[in-house]
Amino acid sequence: MRPHGAKEHFVRPILFALGALGLLLGTSPAFAEPSSCGIRSAQDILDCVLTHHPDLAVSQAAVERDIELAAVARQRPNPELESKILAGTSSAADDLETETRLLHTVELGGKRKARLREAKAFGEIAVADRQKTREEVALATVLALHRLRQIRTERAYLRESLESFGRILGQLKTRPLLSPEQSVSQSVFEMAAEEYRLKETTLLAEENGLKSSLELATGLPFESLQRHLPAAKTSWPKIGGDGGPAAGAGDLQKAKAETDRASAGLEAAKSLSWPDLKIGPTVQTANPSGAGRTGTSVGGTISLPIPLLSVNGGGRRFAAAEKARAELNLRATNERLAKERQKQVERYRSAVKIFSQFRSRSALGAKHKAVDDLFERGLAPSALVLESHRQMIEIIRSLDEQELAALDALWRIAILDGKLTEAKL
Image 1 (tube, rainbow, N blue to C red):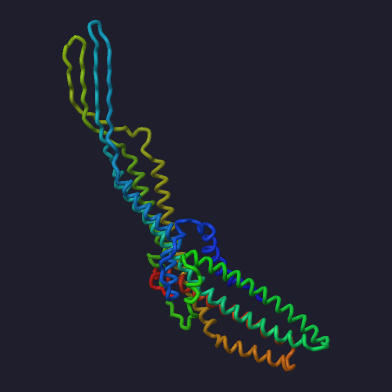
Image 2 (spheres, rainbow, N blue to C red; image 1 turned 90 degrees about the vertical axis):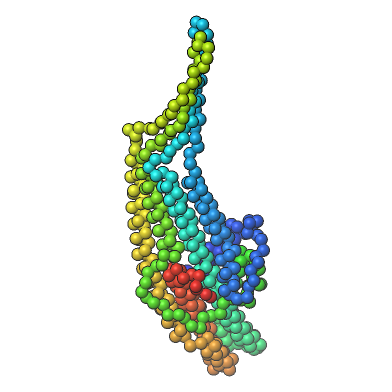
């Protein structure tokens, strides 16, 4: 048997991304509300997932949270009220002096503007994270829906093989005496039947995991979804090999947002080199001993720290280094995604070519049935029957792997091209 690493490459991430989330959030009241989705097609299932998936709800909450950062950055320092009372005694009477100041902080160096820009950049990062989550959820859902349809087909072929083995074993058991060759054939068919039952059990476990994941993602029972699984694609779109990642791609969008945040952080660090000016009115009263009345003085106070020991040099150097890192990451992300798109285009074309060259599954079934008929008439050895069934199952699995590879590449290209909203099941 050939290894099935390619299939596991798709299936395990689907089960992990969707199934593990069910264990973490399946009991949360926030996600336990029934869904209001109306399901009439496979596209409706995908749209429902992109509306109700818990990961997207968390990402949206992060966006709504970071929107408030602008309000935080917009706040101005509160005024300060400072009062001082001095009392003393002299030989004739008591002395009393008061001094009251109201100080308003004036932020110099564009601190408030830098804070606002930095807050906006954090909000853009949250939006990019939401877009990235949306892309991951959409891709996992598309692969899960098609994989469920494939599992149905694979299980049908396994059951067909088991039925053929059952008929052959039934014929052998009705014979009063078996030749050595027939006795060996009986043992071989029994072991083959056991192997195929194990394969069916594995597919059933995979199917149950995907079902549970979709129920969590949509908030609907799988019974309402199973009638609307996507059909196998009969035509594949042509994909151009030229082009790079679009600005709407989640990874690139986040890299740009992080660059904006780093640039805003450098502005904020530079603004901290400027001291804050405090200015306001001052009222002073005095009642000297023996004067008989209180004197009042009115003036102003200015407070300005002298930047002798620190001008935030370390903070500015750190922010400059962070900006350089973010700019390098943006260029690297752009180049990486451009290479990734080229790789996905080649992968897509290769998978579609292999998938399209196969004539039909019905012809495959007819061929192995002919071999079964020959065996039942005593014209074909048991080894040929077993090899026929094995090849049929392997070809079906290989075709499913190639179809899933083509679908995975097709949707990844749509994501990189910023056309996720235009892609349809």
